[in-house]
Image (cartoon, rainbow, N blue to C red; front, side, top):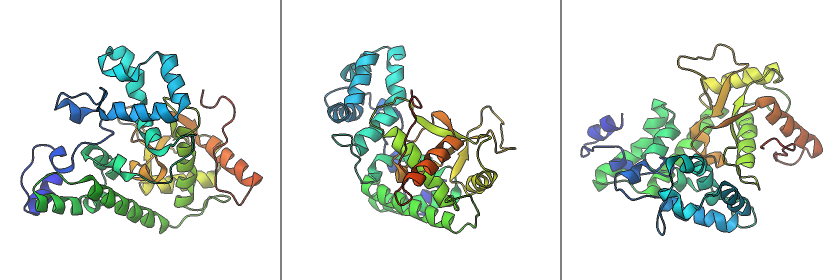
Length: 305
């Protein structure tokens, strides 16, 4: 589709999407393999610099490295089996280094630059042609005009505009819901805030919960709302095996659409699951304690261990 849009706009042919959109943070270093430069290597590797910053502001990450006996400055020299836990944790290292500041406080900025590059932008579209076209149209025009790779600032601006357009479309869908969760936007905010709070929690976790299970304790009205949210593309089904489809919502494993990842400071990946009823219970418990305050994840002891 990108090739077709570029050709239709009269732009030059390209070999790979990175020629148009550049490399991104969440591609696992694939872009760097083309140049033979390891992003994990000091002193200028991008992943090395991210880890170095996080070590300086997050004692829990430093403690995790010590427990795992990983020297982040030598990751690129380690055997694959020793590298594996670090590489698996990399998306959370990236988001924590971007959104945390010293003392564990959160930065308020969205920092959409973290979600630029071909891999990330493609992920944000979730394969939705309408979202893809809206996101890529200004970028294709910039590529045609520049005859070269599009800048990250323009990519971030286009992503921001696309996300707001997507959220606006979700707000127009009629729903019923349950309790104080009556709309798709309210549901995804509860879920998104929970995952954001757990992944950016004071204690670093290399694999925090990032997907949910629609379990038996979820109210029927919320299950119906989940179905509408899934149909609208704001939730995505995570099949357990090839050919698995959603026949019954209860028991289904879902994640937030990557289109919403920048909105909630989440990495573009999926990991461990947690029951949706647990997320709802924490939300409603927090609301009962202070109905005027926004949701804060109060995790029961051991939930993320």
